[in-house]
Amino acid sequence: MTKKTAGNQINHALRFTLYIALSMALVIGSAHSAGEKFVIAQVQYGGGGDWYGDQTTISNWLKILRTRTDIEVAEERVIVKLTDRNLYQYPMLYIVGHGNIRLTKEEIEALRFYLTHGGFLFVNDDYGLDEGFRREIRRVFPDQSLQPIPDSHLIYHCFYDLPNGLPKIHEHDGKPAQGFGLFHEGRMVVYYVYSSDIGDGLEDPQVHPKDTPQVRELAAKMAVNVAVYVLTH
Image (cartoon, rainbow, N blue to C red; front, side):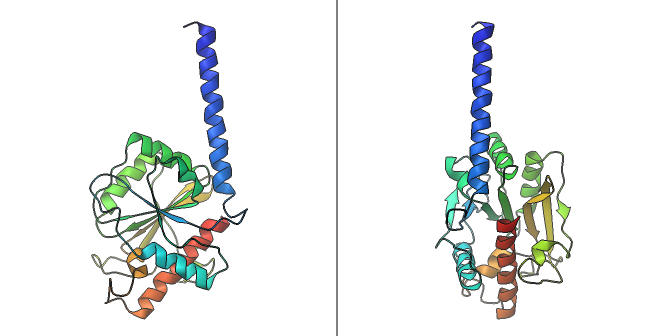
């Protein structure tokens, strides 16, 4: 292979990468600009954790958005892998689970690109996801650490006013509910809820019958705030 041929191939690869980057940024950034319905995509991941949990959470979440806001929403959740070509159609991804999560190198790269080009990741520790998620998100953003999100942050006030921040839904280890975030160029791109379990608070009432209507209402308000924050920032 000549130097000229090699150079042409490199230039072609760079142009293709830039084209994909621009396309993905435009797809994510233009969500709802042409009347598309808001979709929450649940991520299928490896490592042994139950990525498929919260079977009724997203459908109930969307129903809440439909009845309480003017957001045009889909009917049901979508299941995606981080390497799916249509990942960039969705402005928001949802990760949940009790156990381990392990991402491939390709998934790490795809998630980093998605988040740094307009996407948003909501992660719900269903009790047991914490260690694996913290390990994997360090691979996505090796130069950052999850930051505590203060109660004054807009995500707790953008639609409903939640003066105490992230609500506590499930007991887990009795620790206080904690919200953590990661930022890219000043924008929060990852929001991680620990020792709270907003997802379970959105499930059908018979799934967690001990959850009181008051607790479920707090979960609903937090869920609305997350969606509104995603769509306005």
